[in-house]
Length: 255
Length: 268
Image 1 (cartoon, rainbow over the protein chains, first blue to last red):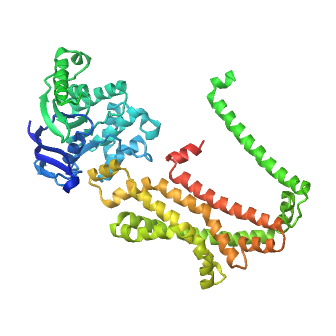
Image 2: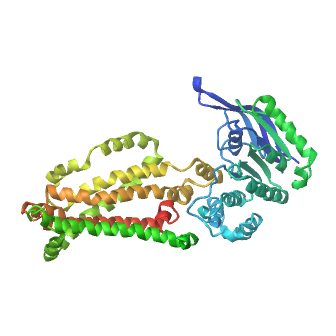
Image 3: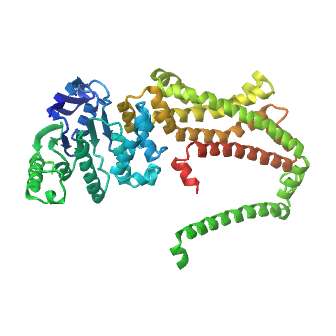
């Protein structure tokens, strides 16, 4: 494995002068190629801010981010992003929304037809591709948004609480699909979440972030076998990781 | 009752029908009341005429009414179309240019506060009794709601979609065509519809002030001649004109943004 993303002293300050808010950092971290790393922390801890800085969609106040050997100074295009509020447009069908990602990049959707079909099958949406977003449930919308974020074969995926607004059962279901897709294609995934269990179930490493200003308190290697199904989740090792993480937040006074 | 519980579709249909019947009954009742109240209260015919007489006298003067509807219709449509054609690019330019947003935009907001109709006598005195001053007044009435809604429309793309567009590396033009423009259409139509409702008002008032043809002219002349029956006939055709314009805009909305929630709600 080689280093894909390198953060060096990354700091974010919003505003300037007396009204300045020190939101994040300084943070140092390296992310390996093919890793599934979770940024875990409570709301407002700056995990989304960090994700946007890695994507080049938000300026860095101090420090440096390197992605695949290149300094991040503007929007990165070799990534797939899923935002908390999905980016499905209401005037296109599920299929049309996936094609939108390709069309924006000047790729002819016809040339990727098989890719799209396969992707839709892997998230069980093959029978819904001609539906409009408003005709789908929240979970289906997020599945469609996932296809949209992945169709251009990005090497890195940034997922900002993609399951945040879903009910517990739907979340569980989509996690399973997310995990098998990651195991199959092995992109590097940066997964923003505030669910301890979700982070431990999905990730190779969990970066625990504490707020005001956002800082990486600890990075925990999750040494559990994949796929992490129900058996793994009920194992004492899994529970130990959950406890360890809870301990950090408790000591910090977050929970 | 039990059967309607089992078939919610029929229950909904029945409620819809019940509501419509109430409205239609009220509508008919209103005109019946009008018809007989004129007789009961012995209102002189030069003050108010019953609806039956409006229909009768209006039909007798149909040729003139139709011609004037054409005249006023032409003024309205020309003013409206010019407003749409000019307001959209100007709104777009203001939405995307910081300089214009700090200069022309506040200026437009100030002008919006001025009742445009107040300019009508000036335009008539500058440009005479012909078609042009009417078109300009309709244009003034329509331009502001369209341009202000267009600015709002092009400025209110969600942060997520803006970021999505940037992350694809697409050109400004591609982003505009594939995301910004379709996302802006619903708000643009708010302006189009508002302007369509007010367009005939502008045309009628312009004709009141100085004109020798058109429905506004007609209404003013026949009222002066103590003929409320013909005035109401004129108002009826003016209303038809407004409804037709609004109907066309609404139809365009349904064709262009069938996906939008405002269209989906009214489609059933």
